[in-house]
Length: 456
Image (spheres, rainbow, N blue to C red):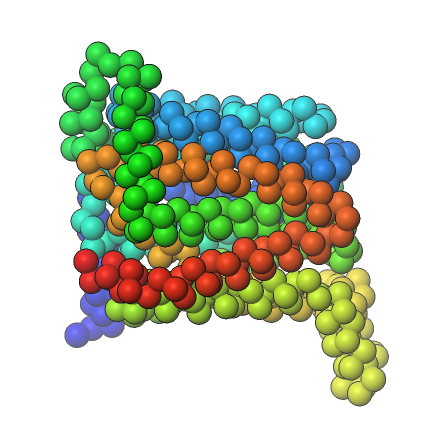
């Protein structure tokens, strides 16, 4: 067998080449969304701070975002069934991404971000409908690979992050982010048009459109009581609900306050933020490509426990970043591993202003590598687990109602994290550790249930 044939045999490459229909269009157009998203994401909180938003206001914006997501998720199943997966995805992609990107590009103060977050929160409708487009016509045994491919595409897109760093370094944070947001507006809108034009309605979607024809949204939602009971009488769906809620809260807290912590407390130059996603993406890409398919036989429990353990360690490392990097710096200098002139030459070559920044950045790179490995263990399984536990004929309504519950539970933690950050910017990461320990205990106690899911 030739080397080329061996490469084609790789499960992820094979899935990417052979996947058909909506999953194919969704995967192939994803870079048009992930590239601009990954360009501006590392700088969002710093951009808001530059426009004079306080930590508490940034937390409020996050809570508004979650509140609107909750309302949108409540209606998402009914809207998706009524309008169809394809049409719903296009309409709410425009509302939740095209419009907010324009608002963010011209934002002047706190209220611009509140309005932008309100539109952006509608993403829960398109998240539901787009996920239905992605999975409903796909084979069940290919879902982990499809979600792994999505993560790979997202991570590959981060290679463009140096462009964001260059803009921030050359123009400063505010004009650079305005350019990036406008680019996002153009690129994402092109993706939405292509997906609508070349995608099609799923078979389940056609059935649900027929069943809901002539029914109002409110009447369709009339069955939510039974769906709610179904969720809370199913141990499988309760487990999926707990996992999703914890990861949603921790991702929200980290995404909003990591940039503020490393630039405001650790005093890292702002443009360095763009380089962390590059390293993280490279590690995730390598890990998922080389090892993900080999871990399929391990099911859900053991990989997630390993990943959660690493996540906990990474957040501890982040909390003690200042003390640890100072200790490392002092140790190296005290033992005179390098002459000062040699250090200066190295720093000049690597474009670092001083040795302390070099040590801190290297330390944070190590943190990012561990975080990426943890992500690779946990997230593809978390994503696919929820979809495998949902009844296919009611996927839209169950997914929508589950997200209502997840987001409703998450809403207070935007403000809580902002309040904690206002006291000490390390405190939000202590909150993350507490939640990770809770979910670790839940998964540890769910051995039989997760083993059954593996073999079902």
